Image (tube, rainbow, N blue to C red; front, side, top):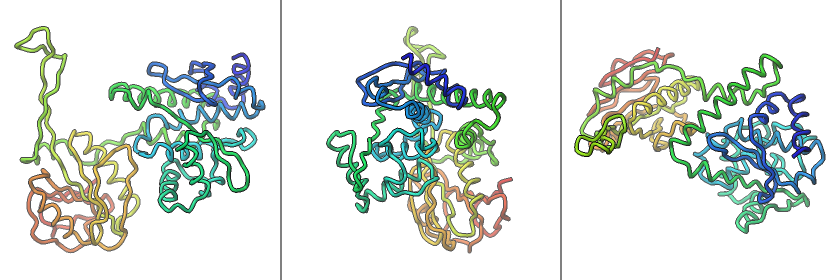
Amino acid sequence: MKDVISISKKLIYTQPFYGSVLLALQKEINNSIPTAGVGLNGVNYKLYINENFWNSLSEDHKFGLLIHELGHIVHFHLTEYKHLKDPELANIAKDIYINQTIDEKYLPPGGCTWEKFNVPKGKDTNYYYKRLLQDKEDGDSKNLNEALKAMSKGEGSFTTNDGQQVNLPNHEWEEIDSASDALKKIVQKNTIQLVKTITELVSKSSPGSVPGSVMELLKSLSVIEPPKFNWRAYLKRFVGTSTKTWVTKTRRKKSKRFTQMPGLKEKTFSKILVAIDSSLSVSKSDLIEFHKELVHMYKTGNDIDIVVADTEIRDQFKFNPRKPLEIKGRGGTIFQPVIDLYNKNLKKYSCLIYLTDGEASTPVGCRGNILWVHGTEHSINESLPGKKVKLN
């Protein structure tokens, strides 16, 4: 532990951002883990280090190891990437991303890097996960195949075609995965607050020393722009027969029948179909704007199904605000396929909200509650049936 503290001091002087994060963590020597890792300590984090592995490293590599483990925290890998369903690929993707943010001289040998998995440098975690997922399905990546075979056997490493040994990550953040929703939210908020506070302090004392990748992530997670449309009021008016109701317990009021028991609270929500125009005329800024409005729709407590369409329906999925929005299509625009889908499911959905630039011919046979939402950069298409608004 004295050696860990010594290396930590070097980190504080040379990398004040990571050094400050390290100061906030409890540290523990734990030889039950193969190398090192981070985990929960209540609602905060703890750093675990395997003594034998630590002692096998040079001073530079110890330095890099600390940055690597802290990188998982400050890049929100423990809290913001639950949408990556394949844990083995997610672990590799996270390590590829983190390792490219560390100077090569500090990287311990055998780490997962972009070169070893034949993926481009400079991409984010989501990109690497998608690329690895595609490579897994295609079966063309020999190194990935070997990595997955080793993982299936419980082995901690594999050997590449050119004879390099690669240590495989084993991020078992089960205490977070198995935690209650309330605890997950607290940990998530605490992580954002920790990174935000340290960023503000270090930016004042050592300008330019906060990693740019952290600044961008923090901005996207902590800054929520106000909605450009009053979704709460609109959705309250337009819910239909598909409204669902459930009862939960609340300690804010006591039960009328059993005075020592918590009272009951009734909650309702509706299921909404939201269509995203994925035609080529819809710009990247339009799609970013649409995604922000979707987050605010989601916050009203309604269940949202997404349909992506240009001249035809390209994709359908349930909206998850934590998952990046994938847009397929980018052809012309025909509204009719979505209208036909909505007409077949009128009993299922309270309303249809179509996010679009409005540049297409008028669909026929429109039924139910429809709202056409035009992007800020576009004019309202008055020929469309139903209600129409323009974001501004």
